[in-house]
Image (cartoon, rainbow, N blue to C red):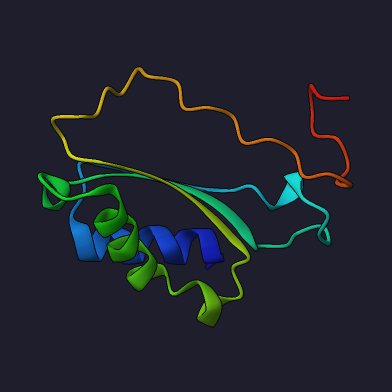
Length: 106
């Protein structure tokens, strides 16, 4: 099981989200091919209703445990169901300086 799948399963178990998406973005950074060190998480759950952004991020970080899993970067998009618009396009994460260009980028 990949780290991406482990993170997604842990978030599903903890939050019972209405939407969860975990993307390994390591290929956009100057890391070895196949690395799992940079992730983007989109999580929508009822538990986030009325919580501040920092409280949401802390709750996610507590489950993901970045240091214990060797994660270098974690981009978080945390929404309450009342805030979530599934058709909203999330911004594309930029490539890291020094990383090989990704498809469609030069």
